[in-house]
Image 1 (cartoon, one colour):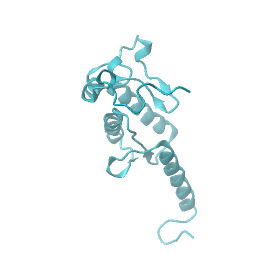
Image 2 (cartoon, helix red, strand yellow):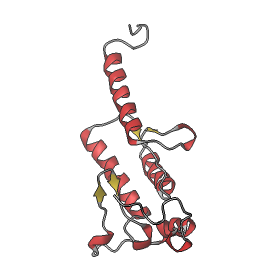
Image 3 (cartoon, rainbow, N blue to C red):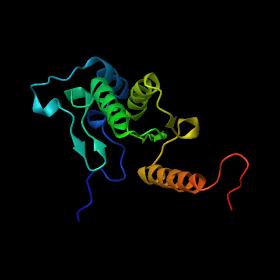
Length: 148
């Protein structure tokens, strides 16, 4: 595999993303429902796209979060929802948008202390740990008894 010509060098200004403009576009751009490129699209690890081209913006995150709330309600899911954030520039604005929807519906949300970054495997581990504890407590963690 050939080494990229920019390897080990500072990135040229013309290829850097203007993060404040990207975040502004997240809130200002509105997707065109008739444009397939601006619809919610899930990749291997979640919704993908850029706010610059209308493919990832607040309206997408609000709609996805609302769909999650509706699914949880229909399925009778009442336990906590574990939500992570990564290092992408729009991760924190998306987290805030999602939390607003979940809070409005009274969903108990678990996030990293101090708004830290949370890799997907950490979220998976937290969910599995919660499930194990919930099953264990269903067999005797109520008041007056002790788990052994």
